Image (cartoon, rainbow, N blue to C red; front, side, top):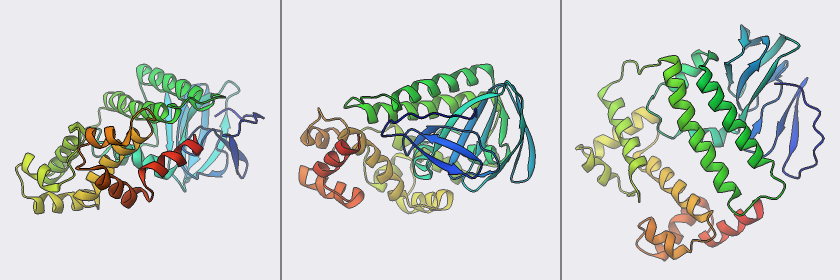
Length: 294
């Protein structure tokens, strides 16, 4: 949260103005967070205070932030800086809504984590959790600011972010002693469904398979999933399958045939139609576009 005058000309780095503040983006998905001052937050921001003291308001609510306090803001939040100490320092991440949604679809054990965070925008975390946050921050930042990305650059970055989500969630759960509240049998079934998808490799694409494993009917599983998430069971299954597809397509040493076999698609033709239906382009062109972006 230190103000920055970075004039780096890295082609992947750009700034967007937020009235009286700046956020320096290294890519369009993740960035070191800047200093929100009388600003409307455009994306999801998580900031850890590493030194000093700060006073601010979030949507009119007065808050203090000290060492090992983590501030979490959502798009549309109004942040007003009421003053920081001369020795104030912080670091953090800014995630686009799309990327935040992708990451938070990962089942992490507590279904009410996002609710808890929304009710506790400033949380004091343990020294261990703070150390973990800083370690990943420095590592991910170094990867994103590398002058000459390697062919696996995007894949490594994505996996680091996913690992960070898992590890930090576990540390946060211990720190806050947050516990699921008023879980229904449907909530528990939905959690088991998500965990089953995550643990399965290759991931079956049929709702029937998951229903059989959970000893419920496909209709009941679909109904519970819709109630808990607002999405159909097949939509959630496809999201996870596509994550595996995209992760493999980012690995240039793997042939399409190898990916088809590993992910248990019936044929290269079926795989091609599946990818085009859900990603908008054939696997070959998805890889070509990815190469340009990287």
